[in-house]
Image (tube, rainbow, N blue to C red; front, side, top):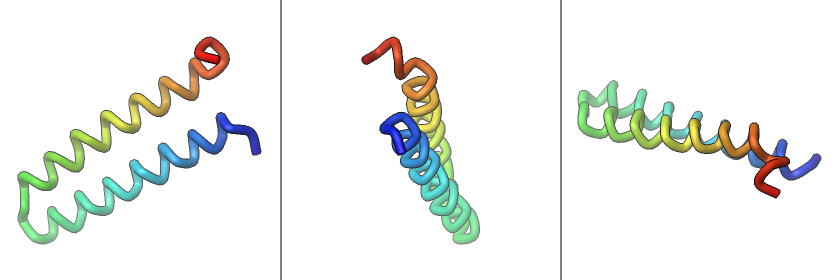
Length: 59
């Protein structure tokens, strides 16, 4: 498995964990935590996908 795919798998894994934590926080009616999980999860996902897409250009 090349490094590009490992990075993609890690990004998806972290995003899934953030989504699960957000869902659990939603069940506990902790809206601040839900917002934080959505925000950080989105940033990690967008950055990771951009990194994977431009992998060859970056090096």
